[in-house]
Length: 244
Image 1: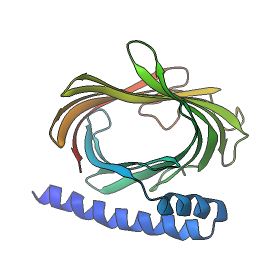
Image 2: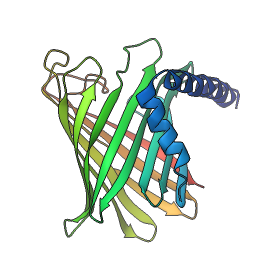
Image 3: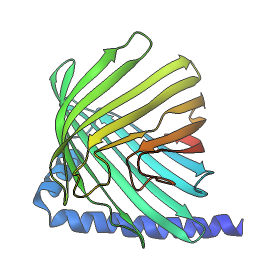
Image 4: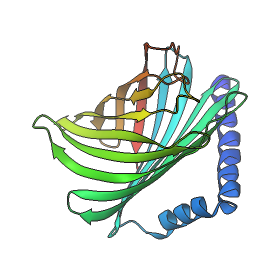
């Protein structure tokens, strides 16, 4: 109980500090501020929020995730915030914000921003992305959303990214969901030309509470667990999720 209370104290203090730092930086960055204002003032006609707590047994840490999805007449908004922490406090905080604008029923324009902080470790570089999302492509066994994106990471030359997202109900209480990203890298900054990151999940739901497992798969990402050039990296979590 004492360890849990201590972890919660670190979590709350670092979360408050992180939110303040986001807003402070955003006020002095006109493009970032415009994106945040657009998201805040487009009131969703429908919204879903969930909280997740993951236990990673390879890295021996916890990750708390807050996700939001909202739809309105213009399109939809999605964002998430990850806080990864051990007993000593928060290791890193990472968030992604994505806004989709309807073009035609099967196609959206998307603008995205990714950023974060690593406490006492290598700095996370902010990334802007923009492109087209193709909605609900039917692969017979699975329907997916596919994004073709132009990617600009701070300190790197522009590159391309492909993102695929899926969520399939296997039964009324079992779901197969996840995503993968494949992006090019600036060879002067990264040790490998391509980075792949995937997070498939198997989730079991009863009412508002879910339990599941997530596999974190990557190649070419130096920040991954046990990274080695030219090799795959794997770690697995068990998690509990609550949908509001």
